[in-house]
Image (cartoon, rainbow, N blue to C red; front, side, top):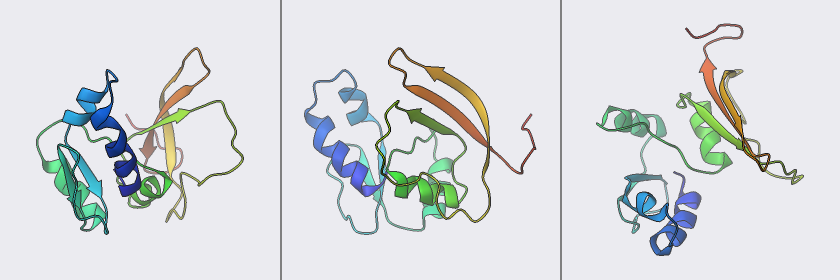
Length: 140
């Protein structure tokens, strides 16, 4: 996760009584930051090197899939470098009228294929997209 998201989550989850608190506190976490030097939240560590190299190293570690939590800047950096294998976009039925774009300064168009779509009773939708190499190409 990016630094800002880490700081927000680290301030909330350790003292939360939510049913999700224990898993959030127990899973390994990596904070991508050039400025933060310590990570006090349990199971956290700092990654301050090259983003591509750090992600490649994480992908080689044993374990499950990686999940990226973070704001638009973090997602933009991962997208620009082609480091995201699957996008899970949570779409709330609210227009704020401001904010940062999720995709910015891409070196080339990023063609996505819808893999799944779900909507809950509040109208919140989750769309799962996977990148395609080129426009019109479908993954088998």
